[in-house]
Length: 507
Ligand code: ADP
Image (cartoon, rainbow, N blue to C red; front, side, top):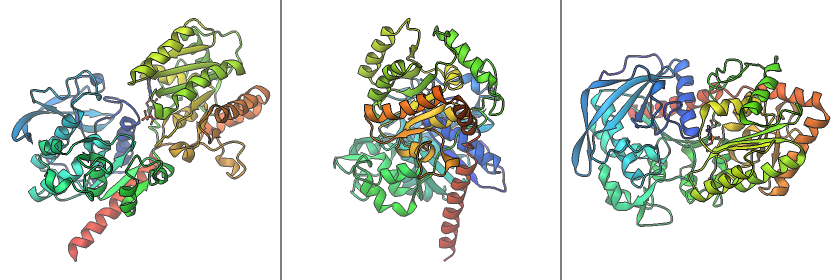
C-alpha cells in the first residue's frame, strides 16, 4: 500500500457499505459514487473503502487486483487477516476489504439482511481504519455513511487517533434514520470499543432500550460533522414524530447537524447519452421519449393502441416507508383514469413481496398494468425514459432520488410532501412557490384522497392541455439536479471543520 499522493485539494476517504454501480441497494450507493465523483472533479483526492462482497457487479471494476500486503485487524480478542483489493470504479480509486474470517462475512450472496450484520459491519469499520493507519494515509476527512460504518466515528477517536491517525475530521451522513444499528451492549466489545465507557446516555446507549447500544447515535456524538440528505428531513428528524428515537440526540448536537439535498449522477442518468435507451433524447429534442415509451410497451406486452395514454412509472424498494398501500392504490386509480402503470420494485419484507406478487399475477396479461418484482438497473433506465408521470407517495423520504431522475428523463413527479421530496418537487398549482420552480404534483396527507387529488390534476393537464404538459416536461428536464451544488456544500463543511480544528490546535 502506498500513502496518498499530494494534492492541492482535500484528501477525502469515504467508508461505506455501498457504491453504485458495483454494490448498490439504494440511494446510499448513488450518493457515495455521485458525491465522490463531484468532489474529485473539484480537485480533491477522493478514495473509497468498501467490503469485498461476493455479489458485487465485478464487471464494473475491470482493473481489480489484489494488493500484495496482508492487513491484520482486531476482532473478538484476536487479529484476523484481510485481503485488500484495489480497483477503479467510475474513475474513483476504491479499496475492497475481504476479511479472511471463518464467518465469511461478505460471502453471503447479499449485501444486507444477515443475522450477524452488526458483527460484519463493525468488523469492516475497524478494518477500514486499520487500512488507513497501516498504509500511512492521512486523510483530511473520513466520511462514513449510515449505521454500517457509523462505528468509524467512536473507533477513530477512541483507538485510532491515539495511534497516530489523527490528521482529520470525521463526517457522518445518515441516509435514513429508520436504520440505526442497535445491538446488545456487549456486542460492541468485539470491534475493540470500550462498552463500559460507551454504554452511557450521552454516548452510544440507545435512547429507548438501555441495555442496547446504537451505532448511529454513536456517530452523531463522535463525529465532527453530521449530515443528512435533505433540509426538510433534517427538520423532521429533530421532532419526536420523525426522529425514530434520536430527536433528542440530534437536538443536543444540532450545531454540527445539517441537511444537504443529494444530487444525482448526471452522467449515469442522462437521456442524451444513456446506452440502455432505444433512442437517446434531450430537453429540446424529445421525439425519442415517445419511441422509448413505445419500446417499453412492446417489451412488457402492454397495449400500444392509444399513443396518448399516459404511462405512470414507479421504481422503488417496496417497504412501508415508501407508502406501499398508496402505490397499490395508484395502480388501480391509474387504470380508472385511463393510464398505464409500470412498477419496478422488490421487497425484503416477505408479506409485501407476496402481496405484490398477487397483484402482479392478477394483472399478468393486462393491457395496461405491469409489475416487475425484481431489481433491474437497465430496466429502470428504460422506465424512467418511457414514463410520462412518476409516483412517489412516501410516508417519509430522507431525500429520494427517483423524483430527480424521473424529471431528468421528462417524467413528471407526483410526490408526497415529505423530506427531500418537499425540497425538490414543487406543485404546479402552488401559488406560494415562484412559478419558475414549480415542477410537479404534490400532496400532503398520506391517504388515498391526497394521492387521488394530485393524480387527477396531473391526468387533467396531460389529457386536456398537451401543450402545457410538454412545456412542463421540457422545464423539468432542464433542472440541474447534478451533484455540483451539493458537493460544494460538503466542501464548505469539510473546510470549515478543518479550519476550526487547526485554529484550536494552534491555541
Ligand atoms: P432508497 O435509497 O430509499 O431506496 P432512493 O430514491 O434514494 O430510495 O434511491 C433509489 C435508487 O434505487 C434509485 O436510483 C432507483 O432507480 C433505484 N431502484 C430502486 N428500486 C429499484 C429496482 N427494483 N430496480 C432497479 N433500480 C431500483
